[in-house]
Amino acid sequence: MILLRRRLFQNAGWLSMFNQSAKAAAPAVGDPEASRKVYTKLGLRPIVNAAGTYTTLGGSLMPPEVVQAMDDAARHYVPIKDLSRAVGTRIAELTGNPGALVTTGAAGAIFVGTCACIAGDDPDKAKRLPFTDGMKNEVIAQKLHITGWTRQCEAAGARLVEVDHRDEIERAINGRTAMMYYLIADRHFGKHRDQPDAPGARVSLAECVEIAKKARIPLLVDAAAELPPHENLNGYVKMGVDLVCFSGGKGLRGPQNAGLLVGRKDLIEIAETFQSPYSGIGRDLKISKETYIGMLAAVERYVKQDHAAEYARWQAQADYMLAEIRKISGVTADYVPKHITNHVPRIWFRWDEQALNFSREDCFKALDAGDPPVVPLRTPMGVTLVPWMMNPGEERIVARRVREVLEKAKATRAQRRFRTEAELAADFGMDNPIDVWLGGHTIHQGLD
Image (cartoon, rainbow, N blue to C red):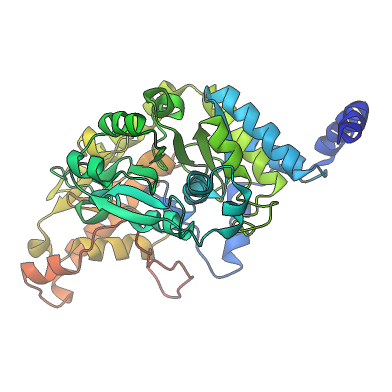
């Protein structure tokens, strides 16, 4: 391996010349309209994402520097184990964490993190996963935090122990406890999604850190969508959390199939052995060399980004949409309260559905069916628009489409079957990232 590394360094000059030549020969990036053809030729219609960083919508769009880094990575071979460690070391330095590991999404981070907490550095236990009888295999989680994502803990062989209050957590800790799981932004998920009075965890993160430290058990935090704010990249670890999971394809704007596990270096090093190219339970968690480099480029970009300027752009887009939608007679619109917005500006709008004989779900379907398709969020406040993942200028498209849909609804009110207020409200189901998104954007003939 030492000889291989020496040869790589000796050839660095040649590789540099090769990269410069390849970049010079590379074709210019095509215009956005032309690039849509990769989807339209399959009968699909690219959407305007007015919802946010949802896996079902493709997460986020990678910036040019991330795409370029992945393209460069695709031109060469490199040992994957060396690459994983080198990228992890660099990301740890950039983010101010003791250790870091690129994973297969936040879900993959939860899985390998749980594996590390159950098996530790015992190779015999590692080989036995997910069959964990006789091991420390219990994961303590508050009931509000048990979602589809805790299945990743169970996939590693964990047995979930549901608790509600601090005294229940303390009583649940025993010789079989492998770790504690905590979901950040619990107010945004499950049956209480985006409700202004949604309950949060009964036991705070700070209390859980205190309990975990006292009991000497690892605490894993699921912070998949908790960037922004950028301080979270190392903020939870500074609080005393042992392992933190982030999505790579959300706020970081890296490859959607990537994630980050940051925290204790010893646990990170063990977690790495539970994903490809290592054999065993996580062999199917394969990460390409392009993805490793793409994640590194995304983190490098994120830590030097002007976050205040980015937020100001989102706010300007939200301000524009709000001002334009407020011009539509009979429509009420406002900002979503900050405490339930995942730290990005959002607006909502609604109308008298019975007077218009037009429901919120009718509006969603009309926005989806038009040109271009617009996908907002369903929340208790009404139709909700999130500029976070919009390209510059798309706020104008969204505002125009909303006006078109509602004005047409007014003009065609009498043509629709009359529905009671209860019927109009009954077809509205709030979006939830745990659920399967049911939209299908195939090209339809004869749409307005």
